[in-house]
Structure formats: C-alpha cells, structure tokens
Image (cartoon, rainbow, N blue to C red; front, side, top):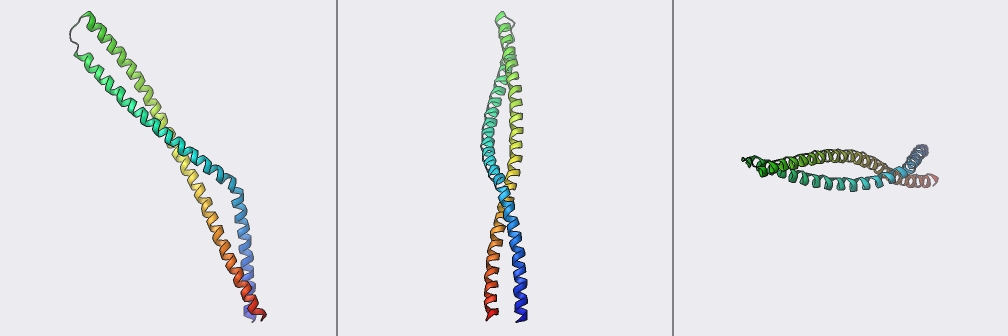
Length: 167
C-alpha cells in the first residue's frame, strides 16, 4: 500500500511537471500564432511572385533568342553586300544601326534577365526560411497535442490508482 501511495505521488508530481511544460508550450505557440499566420500569408504571396517572375524570365529568354537570331540575320545580310553603290552604302548603314539597336536591346534584356533570376533566387531563399519556420511551429503543435493526450492518459491512470488505493 505504501508503495502504491508513493507511486501515486510520483505520478502526480510527473503530471504537474508535464502540466507546467504543456502550459509553457501552449503559451509559446499562442505567441507565435500571429507570426505563423503572417508567415503563411507571405509564403503564398512569395509563391505567386515566384511564378510571375518565372513567367517573365521565360518571356525575356524568348525575346533574347529572337533578337539574337535577328542580329545574326542582319550580320549575314550586311556581309553579303559586296558592291559599293549608293543603295548598298545606305543599306549597310541601316543594317549597322539596326544591329546597334538590337545589341542595346539584348544588353537591356540580359540585364533584366539577370535581375529577374536574382530576384527569383532571393524569393526561393525566403520561401525556404518561411517553410522551415512554419514546419517548426507545426511540429510544436503536434508535440503539444501528443503531450496533452499523454497527460490525459496519465490523469486517468492516476485517478484509477487513487480509486484502487482508497478501497
């Protein structure tokens, strides 16, 4: 009987300790709930932004390919003109100007592409951080639920042991 009483007291202390731990964990989760919700919202927005930027990057790639092909075509046409007539000189000057414009556009698009790619990488890094934060909080919530179930089972056992002890 004395052993049962001692076991009940030990179990009661363990349950009280577990209760304090559960309260601390619960308070921590309440404090982080707002951050959790804002992180989830930001994560969704980042995913949309990432998708938009990926679409923009594809568009830039297509335009770059098209401009490079045009530039090569103009270069080939300009090289074909071997005769020195007034028309051929004008045509050659037009090709040079078109080539310069295309090269400027390619340079601008390359810069846009680099910026977009960099922005996508930044968003991916932020997304990773948010996903880790959310996963960490989800894990704590799961642990809290598990510990609450364990506490409930321990309380049931304690009450059962108390009833046996009183008999």
